[in-house]
Amino acid sequence: MDGYYAFMLIATAFVLMMTVPALALFYGGMSRSKSVLNMMMMSYVAAAIVGILYVAIGWSMGFGGDGTIFANPFELLWLDGVSTGDYIFVMFQMTFAIITAALISGAVADRLKFSAWVVFVPLWAVIVYFPMAHMVFSCTDDSLICGRIGAQDYAGGTAVHINAGVAALVLVVLLGKRIGWPKEQMRPHNLTLTMLGAGLLWMGWYGFNVGSIVFGDDPETQFPLETGRTFATTTLATMAAIIGWLVVERLLHKKATSLGAASGIVAGLVAITPATGAVNLSGAVAIGLIAGGVCAWAVGLKYKLGYDDSLDVVGVHLVGGIIGTILIGVFSTSEGAGGIDGLVYGGGFGSLGDQTLGALVAVAYSGVLTLVIGLAIKYTIGLRLDEEDEVNGIDLAEHGETAYDLHTSASGGGKSVLAASTVSPAPVGKPSTEGANA
Image: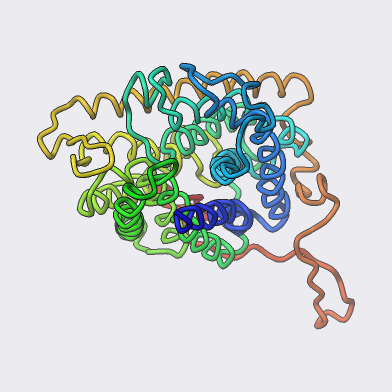
């Protein structure tokens, strides 16, 4: 029992680390040097705002009782009635709310006003994420996705990745394209930071997935049975996704890039997130390979369809989340936590239908309500940075500072300059120089 709670403490710390600093580093490295601080600030501020809101009403809305869309927000207001021994479970779910909101930020890099972000985050958390968490994780008979529909989702393919990916798509359509995109080369400024962030995300994801599979279970039964399987499926799917991404990248552009490897890591993690408790090892490898390859292709859709998703949140999180959620209906086994055989194990189309419907509900719910929130902000305080400030750099315009103050002694003048963007390989999907986000 003591080991169970110790594990949940570690898992919670790991998931918080996924946002600060892992996601901040991952996104920051892919941003241009004039917007890296703003990119990282969006993650840190999301953590502060969503964390407090979650304790106030988020836990109550998600886990406070019955409800098809959400539970009573005031039932457990400020954790009234929750024992201090259960605070660890509140904190664990709080970290999920934090990273889901922060994921959206990668799509709107360079041009979303910081004030608009500060307003958007709490509104989106309360109206979109907290209800979605109830529909997916609460699993009462009335909760929509895991109750009425019966779709499996162990760590957030719908509530986290599809949810954030759809919200990102809505915001980039409302914002419009960055000045100069897609003709101007907008390269990642520091791929070393991105690779470091990807590694930390992979490490933190063990708290994300393994913690989710044992969350609330009987520690004397499910805890020792499920942790090993979940750890293994998370690992193998991620490895397979790296291979899948690099193979497609090599076929399309004749290069296997570090950015592709980092993106493949996250694509695999995203796809295995909902399926981690449902599939066996071969199913995990299959999901990883498919997600890596398809997401590598999908990041190029923005050039064909004309939406400026700065760091490819849509191509990885929305597409990867849909892949992982739906493929549960193909690769799940009755030996998994849900006890359901998928299509390839003779289970028929029932589970596949449930998983597809669950994904569609997540897309519709997040899309419609994010659109309402985005339009409200756009026509009140405004979403978009002024053109001059966008050209000069959002770091300086919004925060009054720059990420790098490098002095070139060779010039003799000690002149302060911003770090130059590094040359990066083209993202999969278009032979340009802009970086892809995983």
